[in-house]
Length: 136
Image (cartoon, rainbow, N blue to C red):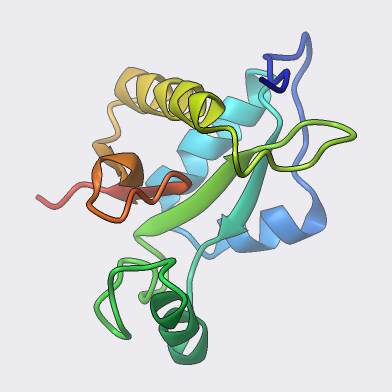
């Protein structure tokens, strides 16, 4: 298993991750900003998706929804794809145990912040990097 642990000091998002996160709903932004403040190194893979990107994600099996039915298809996005980032390694896509740990960290912080969020790991397509605001 790769070593993804909480750092002793806050982490910073890359310019690309910041841009993607800024396309998300304020609650999602608040959640992931707090995780970075806590010292977790996270990459934001996707926020809002346009029609072309959404249909590509669907066609390749990365999404269970076509445009415009995904929570990624609004602005601000009601969903985010995020991943643990390990220095010198990048995103450990194949380490399912780490994804469960990552989801636990995200879900626990969301609960602490009173943000009702769902994890894609519970979905039929097992979308491990997907988090979305729960429907009211």
